[in-house]
Image (cartoon, rainbow, N blue to C red; front, side):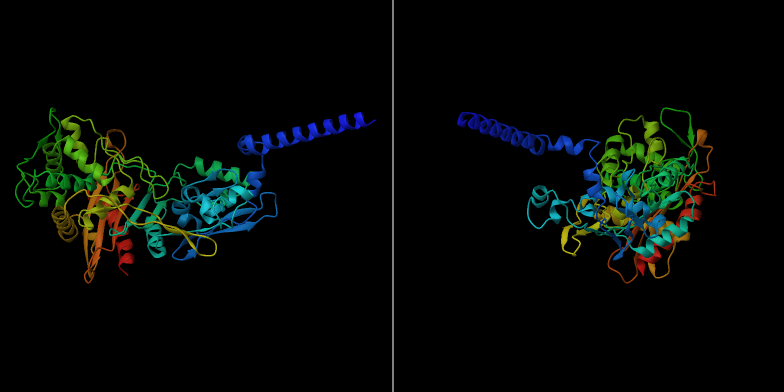
Length: 484
């Protein structure tokens, strides 16, 4: 009898060991596989079991959470959703996350290890903390003015504080309400299909994800290269570039919209936007030096994050001289995001030092304790202070006497550059209107803001006047708010 009991006990012990081994296999060795299995809804249920953390603009939350009482309990809500969509992005139970909602998801969802009271706390307890907060650098009044200025037209505005790199406004138009995508069900999928099917592409973040030919606004970069390379030593002296200008190796003449461009100085060429002079200077500088300069401004960089990823602005690294001439006036394959062109203006305004642009000032736990802080740092130095000072004066002349007079502000020094970007087959489309600028109050020690505006639906069709007439007034309004 005892022998049978011992056999039964041994068999039970063997079963217990097998059970423990299997539990270890499931909970330790195969845990990741089960967690990632699409059929496992535990993680997604836990993700939406508590309110998501807040995104703050000007100290006020522009996001919230709604208790649905469903299995996926809390849905994201947005205050003034269309106004801040280019900043927040969306957090959707159906379509995932974008922009800040994506880049700072760990903090907002409560899974970031830095939110835990002890190291490895979340991993050990398989829990999550209350969602933290993301404090942005955006100034609400500037965001509203930029959004109102575009008035639903296709375009974008990016404004930067030159000394720090803080992004003060980031607007894309037309926009959409991210709340429409927050939950699940037919209403969400219908909204998704409608928004993605609209010809105006309201979900496209034109400020950081769309690149445009920058047109004459790019001439500031070419001027910097000409001064830095020593090809121009006296900006007020004739450049020796005649009119008409024939593109190298071709019989094609490059037209000027302005008068007086024959053998004009760099000062005059920037003030009145002479294509011939700036194209010729680009060729004189040469491809290698032009590439070196443009990349110091941020072109061709695929790694810019604010913290959301920014589309790379393009300047070709292999070109013939005729292509280089066109690229030097913002044509051919040269393309830039509005944020990139704001960076150009910011570098000029900040004495040649370009600070890395950023949209998040800090993240905090739900109780306000700081988790991380974005420290401003130098992106690069595209030019020396002397070159920056010369370019500042050229941009001031554009606003005081040239094509950018619509950007002038009483009580402040404003520098700007108008531009148009031809597009369409045979340049048949209405040009995009560009304006880049910076502003400094007369009693201030440094510029308050650098801004770039692009308007796709520009009414004018004459080079540079479009930028001065369509984009400059928007830039002026944004700069006025920055100066308040």
